[in-house]
Length: 476
Image 1 (cartoon, rainbow, N blue to C red):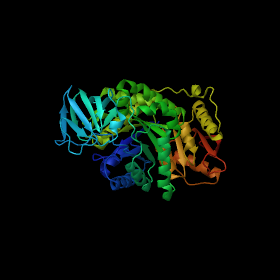
Image 2 (image 1 turned 45 degrees about the vertical axis):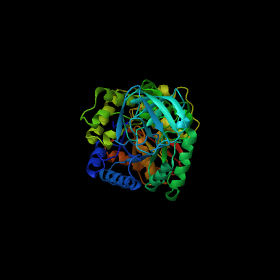
Image 3 (image 1 turned 180 degrees about the horizontal axis):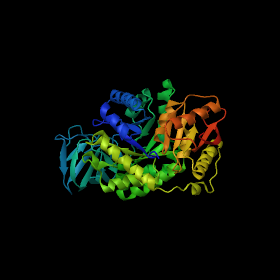
Image 4 (image 1 turned 120 degrees about the vertical axis):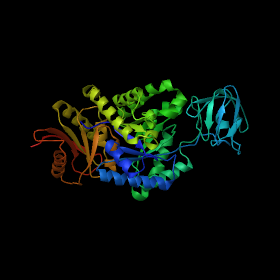
């Protein structure tokens, strides 16, 4: 069995050379993340070109995801680069301050903070390592008392416990970055800090307009990292192609203890709604400096896999860590081991389930048939990739091969759990298409004489959403 769970890896200084990137792709990377919080537009264009060149060399389908920065909810800079705050001392966050910060206070990149907080609010800085209690707000100055001190350095992030910051999800920079991502036909765009479906709908409109010159429409991933997003999960999912369980900022806002249950809920809901889901943040954090992960990190990755996540994501581990290739290798090995231990509950999944579309019913029929007949593979001949996506929402220990004549659909399927994307020639003749699909898997060693497989397609061929046929075949 090929590995079902996909690996998303972030490019950065540690992984931007052709040699390291090639080793990472061979080790198991399926999606490359470009972090638009760092670097210039040309840097991302160059990296996207490199990814496509190296993927072609390796002979692997690799999707590219542009991760937008979102609003900069951060403190300003300090004269000495950082200060050390002591418990109980006063500290002022001043939106009007232009001079560098010191031990008494600092300016703000996020100018709206004085209007978003009031006395009694708890502010968490630097991913929650520092805690400030708001004493009062006077004009542009937020007067606080340090509750949990420590080192505070330039441009560290600010969160409000329980959420409530009004910063919009999409900034002017994000809009420009969407245009950059469209210029190299980015496959996925991740939107930071959406609060509701309106944020995602706006992002969709911007992406469609930016991609129009190339007739390109990227898939959208909503990063769930605000408290306000939690009650709106279902509507956000409806407006998106998938979500990212962004556990860093989310944990700061809702508390660390609440995140594991939220993660399970988000993965379950995404799968039920036929959307993709990525689990992210600190999955292999110790491997930034160590050659092996901790036991807790191994369990963390394995549990996300057992929950049914489509992908697990690496951030600083591959962008700036000492062991980018080894981290990918370890993550791939953990995912494979976890998948080998998971239960298949396909029959229970279909109990009392109703399907309103012919193509969706055919996809589910293929899963059920392949499972009970012991098929060696399921082939989905697909234009958009939707049939393969629906199949991938259910755990089945039969590999799914998404075959398409559309390169963009092929790359998008690189993120789908248990889907191996393949590019085939465009056909209008059904029998020719079926013959080519079987030949591809026989030539690659997936199928051999006597093996059975299930195959779905549409008749007539070549229309998105037109899947209306299921056939079970035996290799002659």
